[in-house]
Amino acid sequence: MTSEPALTDQVRALAELQGVHLPLERAAALAARYSAYRAALDLLRAEGFGQSEPALDFDPLGGSASPSS
Amino acid sequence: MLDRIHARNPVLNAFLTVTAESALREARAAEEAYVRGQAGPLAGIPVAIKDLFDVAGVRASAGSLILRDHVPERDATAVARLRGAGAVVVGKTHLNEFAMGPTGWNAHYGPARNPWNPDHITGGSSSGSAAAVVAGMALAGLGSDTGGSIRIPASACGCVGLKPTYGRVSRAGAFPLAWSLDHVGPLTTTAEDAAHLLGALAGWDAHDPASAREPVPDYVRSLAQGTRELRIVRPRSFEAVDPAVAAVIERAIADMTPLVRSVAVSNFPRRGLFDASFLLTTRSEATTHHRHWMRERPQDYSPEVLARLDFGLLISSEAYLLAQQARGRLRAAMRTALQDTDVFVTLTLPIPVPRIGVRDVTLNGRVEDVGSVLLRYTAPVNLIGFPACTIPAGFTPNGLPVGVQLMAVPFREDVLLRLAHAYQQVTDWHLKRPSL
Figure 1 (tube, rainbow over the protein chains, first blue to last red):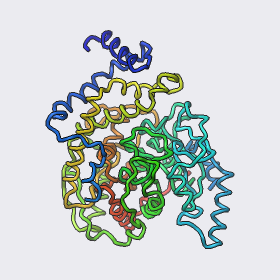
Figure 2 (cartoon, rainbow over the protein chains, first blue to last red):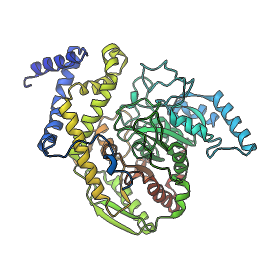
Figure 3 (tube, each protein chain N blue to C red):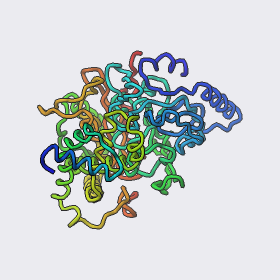
Figure 4 (cartoon, rainbow over the protein chains, first blue to last red):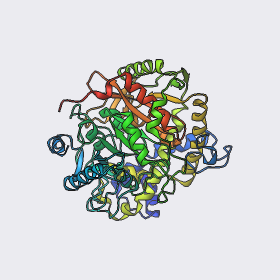
């Protein structure tokens, strides 16, 4: 995802795959914010999540270890 | 109270619906229960309910056009519990569209206005509940908090706002924003009032899958335990904070110091991880919930909210899952920061309450989006699910309130309320009222 028109097309196609039709203007606005998404994802990858972290715990409090312990 | 609502609401836009008739009926019933000796702990207390909670027979718009004609048949669990304790629902309050946003701006219903200066924002998204409490249009408000939506307006308007532990108060019957971040809690004038409301609201509910089975302590009674044995911890420094706000928070910590056993210094985990994890989690969950309307009724969203939801379309399953792993690390880091202490004391909003319509602010010479700045110190607490509250601690030179934020480990709302209550015994910020 590099040049702006190409990025807009890709964002539009991604939305279509999810059943959401993005008019050109909305797709361009979303493409303009792709870098914010990418920065967040890259930061998490760089921190090693997905590789070195322990198993994922979906409990926002951290499961049985959490309550008033 | 109803007269005050009718007089002040045209200026403040705190209520989207006023339930005058049913409120009078409920008030009479509370009076009769009192005469019979059967009054609940909140008998006759007028409460303002954020318009994303279901109240039977009353429109629940969630601040949207899409739900403008939605009239639920049953009360949300939190509303039912307040009513069960004798509270009187006086109306449904303003919020950002679908609770998306921390400003109190709503493209469909107009902005809520700050009781201290109607040219300034209330903060959001529980904008109307905060404004109603501070303007004397209700004694308490019910709000929801996904990234700060109780604490931000409470701080901006000058009242107590309590976000309990994740799962402490049921979300059943509340329109969701992001399932793993949504919390429900009260807005009040005093910490003691918050203790009364939390006592009524807290407890397991079969209708909320995240509801916790932890026992509910007597929060009001616990206030009497005092704070002499409490250990508080504060950040080493305040990162990118307006000097006027920092001065208020420093003074609040100084005022708390003689009330507690010790004050330590610790560092908050790095902001970048919080920001990335919050962005990916909240947008992904919100977009998942709204996808059917994004397909079928995009024209009924405001452009700002639709743009937020569109962002979620970019987020891959990998990104969402990495964000959840980051939350685990952040939670562990905060537990470490709170080890051997009871309450983390920090700020709620790093800037003075902005004027309505201001989109950017300059902090430390850097221009930043107002929404991101407002969420900076509150959203991290939603990611880790810990309880936190804000209490009024002073004013900036523009005459708008500043709140100090307290945070504890899960299910220790009692220590937050004890410290907040003790602070309110030696200060009078919570007693100050805007001239309306």
